[in-house]
Length: 142
Image (cartoon, rainbow, N blue to C red; front, side):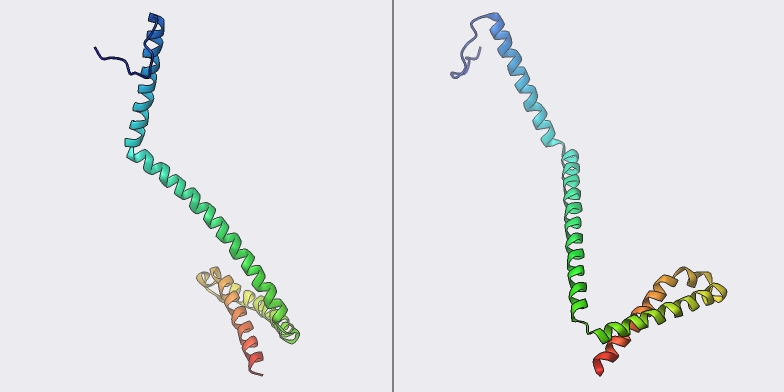
């Protein structure tokens, strides 16, 4: 039979021996469970994927917030730097674009095919952006 380790005292009674055997079984069971968990590659990969997904979500939220903050700062800076006459011209152009958009909406409802009507928001936005860009470029040449 094997001798007990030197750092553990021998049992004084059968009850103590049973307790030591039960504790050793428990520790052995925990060790086997830990080794089984380490060898379960699929579960470990899923845990890692979940952790990376959570990290990506957090990073995306942080980057989105940074982008919003920078966009707000850029808009504020642009508001400060654009001269009043350009702002007035842009506001007048926006009024004209809204009026033209209303007329175009009615015309599209009457004559445009369904595919074109379905994308009208993008087309109106592009027209407004082009008008504003034209006005700003024209103002820059003067």
